[in-house]
Amino acid sequence: MSRISTLRQRFIDDMLLAGLVPGTQTNYIRSILKLVRHYGQTAPQHLTEPQVEDYIRHLSKTVARGTFHIDYAALKFLYCNTLGRDLAIFTKKK
Image (cartoon, rainbow, N blue to C red; front, side):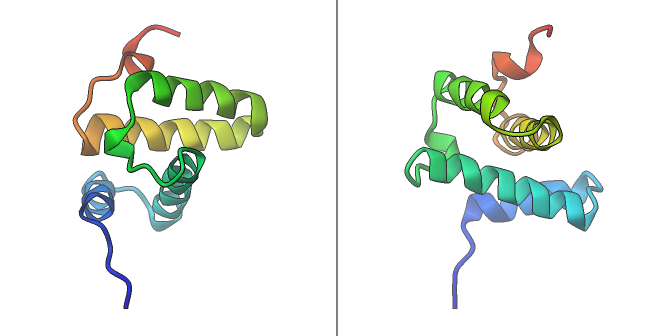
């Protein structure tokens, strides 16, 4: 039996409380798993702001626009809502 991490459970709970539909939740979890794999299984809460920014730049060059928007929204939700981190990449004007 696999054990779900505390962060993953908090992320899921936060998505439920925000009213995100199951399909969006699945996509967001998939997006965060891609981030974790990209950084060699490093937990998202241990990544620095420059690492998150670099990853977003990487995504912008390697995935389709629609996929990028889903991944970006998932990262923003995780870092701003679940982890409560105010990363400039998500708050500065585009």
